[in-house]
Length: 324
View 1: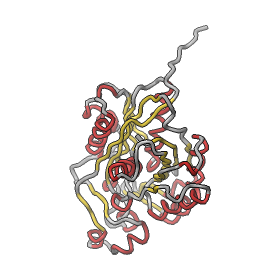
View 2 (view 1 turned 180 degrees about the horizontal axis):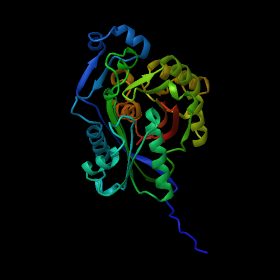
View 3 (view 1 turned 120 degrees about the horizontal axis):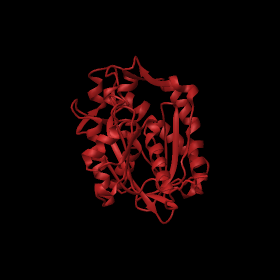
View 4 (view 1 turned 60 degrees about the vertical axis):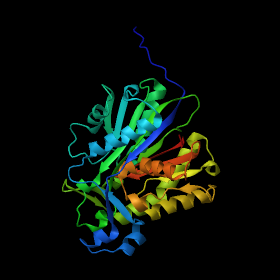
């Protein structure tokens, strides 16, 4: 009987570098009030957004992913030749074929990597990070570039007040590699397929979201997933320095933080509020927030970071990392 040989990778993985990119065009709430029935205070009260970034017509998802990925490699002090796998979580590629990952890798200069997309919508980055960590620990990959990238303005009806005020464009990336000590915890993930119709593509063209249903689900179901990620990693709520939920709605973010504090998280735990100036960028929102917080000095190297993503599917995932 033939016995197959298996690779054996390192015992642990870590994030080696972070990078992000946003389009130059800033769109304020007042700008939106010129094309739909809304105003600055109404938007701030409901979702917490002050402004967001929109890509121009000729700036593609792949373009933004290339820039974020390049920035992450620079932050990790790595060359493209040192990456052997590229994962691009996204849900807004204009066509399912070809995927984004192979195109992005080639443009960055990463030759012949394993390359694939992951569609878990707003949970996509956490899914991708979990996959990257497992690939490294199994020996199937050496260093992995994970890039959450979205061009949501391609799939949002600009006249639909329920979505056009929320969603935006951008990309965030992480380089994942081997580690002598665990610095990426196990992923806690799952789905609620019975709620699939709360977020979907209407007429295969525009994103539809049943806002109140999603709000109720997220404010009740996501804090327990975050606690599960902590338990899997062996981390107490009091040890969390930084909480980065998917930037879906500032009220959801604050509700998750409140529930974690009720379970022992510290009052001085830093909570991401990048949605205020970036909007909801789906799979890009968590790495975007982390990169912005590092640059602002509110997150530092060695901090214990709890990340949790959630969105269409409905899909959710979270894990604990040590900030690079």
